[in-house]
Amino acid sequence: MQLSSTATLYLKFLVTIFWTVFFGSFAVAFWFLDDVHMIGGTKFRLGFTVFVFIGVLLLYSTLFRLKRVDTEAGALIITNYFKSYRFPFALIDRVKVLPVLFSYKIVVFYFIKPTAFGKKIFFLTNTIRLGEFEQESGNLFGTNYGSRLQK
Image (cartoon, rainbow, N blue to C red; front, side, top):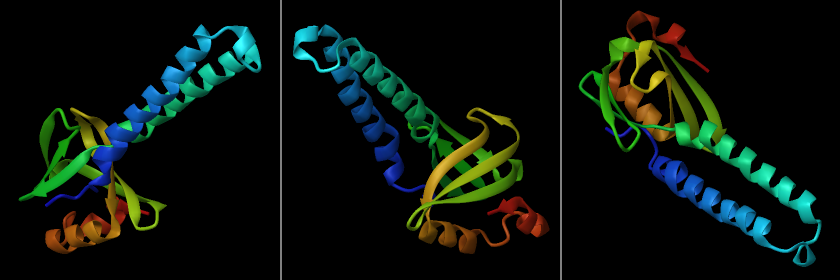
């Protein structure tokens, strides 16, 4: 069962790559223009370059961290669209659900020990998929489910 949203692929690759190429190419073009053709000159170039650099850092630290998460018979299958790994539910220490926009939520799985993707896995899901997963998996985390799920 796919747990992450299909929007993950678009956000992770399409939005990040399009934004970086679009604004990055403008930043490079501004450095090749003469001061005569530009309003603001060097100050504008530096400001726009800083804007692009900060934007790329924000995209890298937010959208590019998203993973695709599927479930299968007592385990999570987590992929970054290049590598896939299978992690049993027993490795999950706690789960945190963060509301984002409308019915979308960011879910963070904290693992007991570091995995191939680190100790924290971020993915985007919607309320319907999260509810289906909870119904299908039952009491996934045993008696400590309430203490492991943080809202």
